[in-house]
Length: 389
Ligand SMILES: Cc1ncc(COP(=O)(O)O)c(C=O)c1O
Image (cartoon, rainbow, N blue to C red; front, side, top):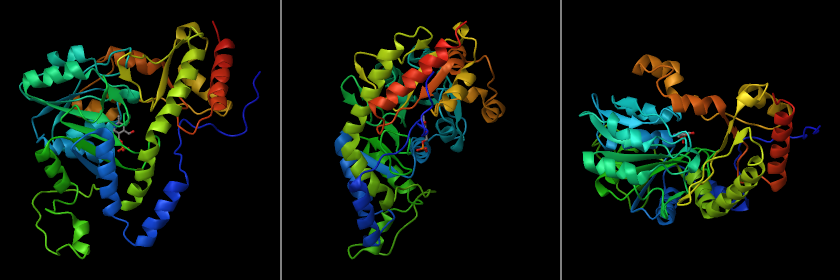
């Protein structure tokens, strides 16, 4: 019997070093804490890291997704194909513009939208495809790019989990028309809250830059500098969605450490994979040879048909051992709001439901030690061993 550890091991937590702290102090001392030079610097470094022509830093991925939908002109009557196995922000972005999310079931191996089912969901109203790179593993972008080209649609990527991830050697953020990232504290790097859009499309980038500052035609922060001018024109119905320099102060240094963070995540995933491969009740995350998994999330499937306990009970038992675990996500078609607004219902997306009923996300963050990972493995092993049918 394992003795529960004394401290709670969370599903994820942010990790900062002296560099972020120093930059934060310098930012406060500068007196300029909203959109300004540090946000610009973060955008430049992010553009270089991704290899995208334009990077627009925002206050969240939710804002990024909303502006992406606005920039491509989604409006009433338009349909956008997406996955039901995601966070509310993905579908809400479409609804905010008056568009309709059209869900397509997931591939039960990758938990990403099943690209082979997408074409049959296209109608004359379809304007875009909005896949999610679940957990940080890229969706089948070759197939989705071919479909969007053939049908003249936009490909907008929800890469909230996928900063640093690649698809066949190309960084996520360089493939679709617009890619939306999140820097929420449980992501691969953080800016507190924050997000960004990357694109090579100048016209879309310029629209988004205006929309993020209440529709102003030039960057507001320059108005308060010796080189700026006070005057401005409002040219669109915009939003207050830009990143600020406090967030960017964190982001600059988190980005510089991102590849190291990703390596720790990969090491934790490798340790989990190796240990869980020996437990028949556990299915480990699918790995493709041509894709790099960023392991923002480590999600296993638990075969409860072989156990005397339920998935939710296993989560509760993990908690008794001071191990956090979570279910990302309760599918959107099982949520009351989307059932009421879209008419979706239980039974509509069987693969999503199959995965949802068995899924557990285990602790995964770049501050974890090999001992933390071993403890999670030992505890889960013990729970399964003592609850076998
Ligand atoms: C798939 C997905 N899309 C969008 C979001 C929204 O991100 P943010 O919290 O930065 O708005 C999240 C947040 O967890 C997410 O998981």
